[in-house]
Length: 119
Image (cartoon, rainbow, N blue to C red):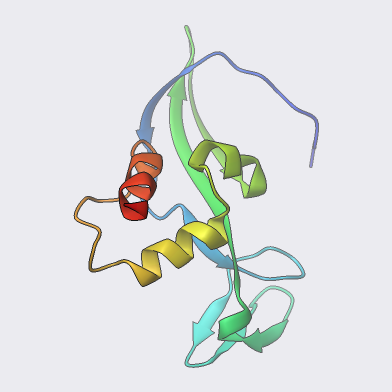
């Protein structure tokens, strides 16, 4: 996998998936399976307590530049600045304030929703 940065001037046309945080394996960062009070990674076999699960961002977007359409997926902590907090922090807010959240949380309004929850 190429870990170099690529810059693309493009417009976001759509979100491909509304679930943009997921429980991740501490070893391989794959999506883990949460069952009761345990977690298990189907890829590497790592197991642990569900209460110790870490969350990561996975944002899939349909974008367009002047000539082409692309589907890109952005993972991990590089999205912390976009959302204004870590995926663990966002998950904690969503879990503890589900009864207070009146608007659907999407990347375009996640920062606004977080600010409303503070007040």
